Amino acid sequence: MSEFDRLLEANRAYADARANVHDAQPNRKLAIVTCMDCRIDVYAALGLHVGEAVVIRNAGGRITGDVLRSLALATHVLGVDTVVVMEHTKCGVAGVSDEELRRITGAQLEFHAIASHDHALRADVELLAGTDYLSGVARIMGCVYDVETGAVDEVVRWERSG
Image (cartoon, rainbow, N blue to C red; front, side, top):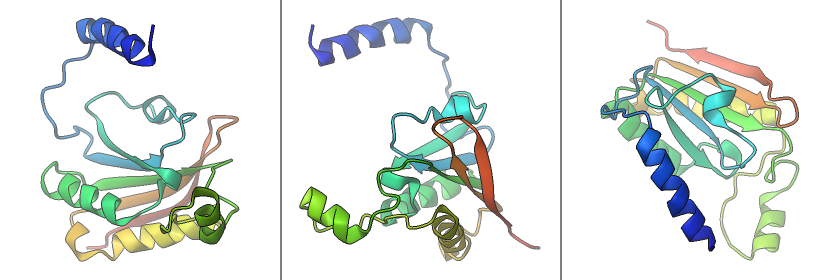
């Protein structure tokens, strides 16, 4: 059986038993930005269920132009007012440079490499907090998920004053 066939077979079972959430607006008004790493089960790690949060994933869980685009829609169309930026230990873009990643991949891109989770999370939270069109975001937390223990450690928290 091909990988595609296994996926479609699994989907048939899922479709019969799935939670039927009708509203696209997350009922906890929450967006999670995290890495694409397959070791992170975002919903289980944060005690969430389908329909409670928007999840945006990319390499490194960094705030990029496409994440900003998604968050603009999440805040203005879906009512999101709280954002969690969750990086993780043993990340493929941590401890390397953009230059090294360009050499490895052959792609002339900005990879948003992570020299320090503390620095990257603080910079990303500051970027979100200072983005005018995200003024509907009232709270932001930056944290690190440990892929070995499953624990989440808070690094930075920001709340809009007034």
